[in-house]
Image 1: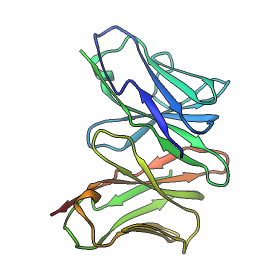
Image 2: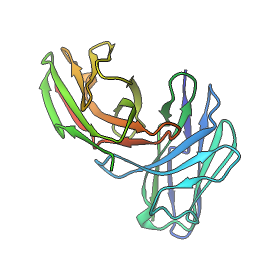
Image 3: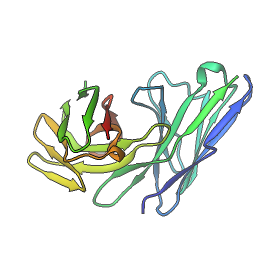
Image 4: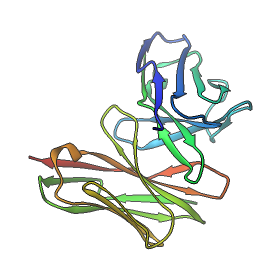
Length: 116
Length: 111
């Protein structure tokens, strides 16, 4: 159980275009999902907390107008990188919070974004 | 400020050579400590959650322990497939589900 998927797994786009990444919890409902960014050989950096039916909470230094997050249902959160530039190239990973007695984050497989 | 430090940064072991990875933390109030395994180009895979000092959990060749200041991930008789980066993360503040991650230990098991 506790499977999280992401789509697409890889995306290459031109500078100035927008890219949408989907994160789905497949076998459980998640009122809270998280979006991370990871640079090569570095740890995960939390970008924002996504709550179903409400606005996302962004970490300090993360531009909310550039990284749009929508959590429209209990199993789907989306991250849209708007007007992408080469410096936005990175590995983006989502996680979904499984509630109950143990509040554990389960992670998706990640999305590799390359902006040319 | 909450801090999580993992050591060593990288570790190379011969197959069958047991060892331990360390995660030390300084937090205002620990709600839970998590261990994840991450393979290259993939998302982290959940291994363990520890909640209180003295707690231990095991899964196959891995055993995680927790004290008031640190956690250890013991690897017994590792195999090449145990090669991965192992991440430690802490959750603090009741009601705040965010995780603070350490920088990880990159483990390589040599056949």
